[in-house]
Amino acid sequence: MDTKKIAVLAFCLGIFGFAQAQTSKVGYINPDKIMSESAPAKAAEKKLEADFSKRAKEMHGAQARLKTMSEKLEKDMPVLTESDRLKRQRELADLSQDFQRKQRAFREDLMQRRNEELAKVVDRVNKEIDRIAKAEKYDLIVQDAAYINPRVDITDQVLKALNK
Image (cartoon, rainbow, N blue to C red; front, side, top):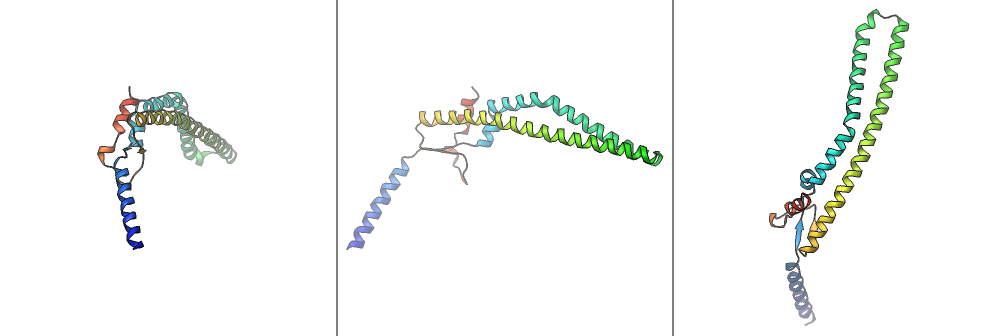
């Protein structure tokens, strides 16, 4: 008799849980789409490009000069004296190390600024998602899932709000 009562109680609790799940409102956003198509993300990318394009061109120029010097040294190697060859090899090695140091600093600066700009965009996206969730009474909005039914995808709604 006790097992029957427990089974009936478990069944009722299961039905109650199922009824509660039916009233939940769930949404999904595609973060990759938001970061590639939203106006704030595009603006951040343009800002980074504008801020770092001059330095990137300088780095490409320095790399081309190093390559030219290396090719010239290779070409002139048979006719150079031992001391001239060693001198030019040292100059090339010093320039190469300097270039690598500047390149590493450039990448670090770019990544730091990209992370800062990305954090601003993510903050704005999260505020917009929060606003939509509260206005439309969502219980849960997820960003990653194994399967998404297109009817719960609110990515376009978030994009529209961000692109105003």
